[in-house]
Length: 161
Length: 378
Image (cartoon, rainbow over all chains, first blue to last red):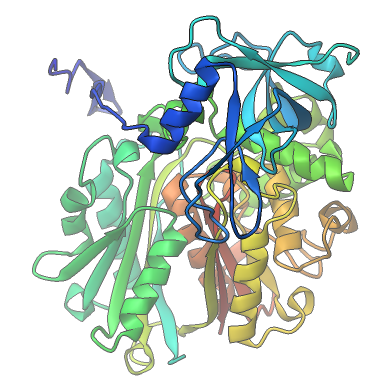
């Protein structure tokens, strides 16, 4: 790793301001649950897990139910289509963060068969025509990378504006 | 609960691009809080600091600044989160019987990092971090969900911004004192619908410290003690899609518990002034509801009624709130410090006359996953 502790020294009101960058490599184990979720996406399937106690289907899946503290082992395939619960159209630019160029939309989508919402991008859509309750469909990435953007975004299903 | 008091408070002015470094800010507020209490460092039994390694740009960020809070040769510990949570831990330590006095500090220089990139790191690296969301875009999802369900208008949110930026003119510590109108807010640049520039809080640097003491010690300090009557803390699910974004159940729970402890039956009558964590204008309306100042969905009506402005039945954020000074980790502790000033009658131009019971509120996490509620009384 390069030493980038101090790149530049500036001055403000007669005092020094040290400017630098922190760039630290890191690895994150995805864990058994997310690994299986991403394996599903590679095969064009979206999986959730059902809680044995409250029967909620959580998508994306996780290891434990936050309400019941049960271990979640029952895998359930859910639909590629769902309902837009809420959304926002983003107008500012953060090119190093945003996968799409503003204006674009984020939404929370409840897939058919799921009881929780999935936060994602909304594209191929008339941004002014987005509304709560509209039907949307997952668009898969052609070459899956084993991460959250293997679903590229959600788009309105035909017949929706 | 044994009676514990806040006996000293200290704040910096909140502003962007402060030239003091972390330790200098912490020393400033520690000295102010000690002077306020009429105490010396030798009167302090233990120290709780508040740091966030990402904000400070260094690991174990509590260690270098702890000395500035008088940690040398003392029991000093740290909380990563909002200052209300550090104060909560400080209260537990004071109640433990081991320590009679606790100094709690918090500092944050939001301007020194890249706030949007830092906040994005709060999202799950395995799942949705890649979406590039930050505080503004994620809060916009909550704002819209809440407003859509209850028919809250953007103008009603804008009224919060107008009120709090106006109140900030009476607070010498505030960062963004503004004379603005609802129209100014509505015409400010759209960031993430429905959140516009003037619905957001500023990027502020600053620090705050408070001193907690047992009853015996509190009676020997310089100022009239402000007693902690009730306090509670509650956390929601981590993921946005697993929560009811339109209502804050953890806030309702924390408020109910704190009120029960404090013997508050009707918060809208029994509380005389409130300082709440309004990182965005819509949040103040949601927190009115969660705190029981009005019923679910009635936050818009409450701001319309004028009840929460200065001179109203229950002034909220006389200091200008977080919309007028958002030094992230400090903001909740500053709410407690402001509540203490109100209960001592030291609020200056922002004083709510005759306030006897005050509420302070802090949040942490994406879309306020965690809430902490304090009820204080003189």
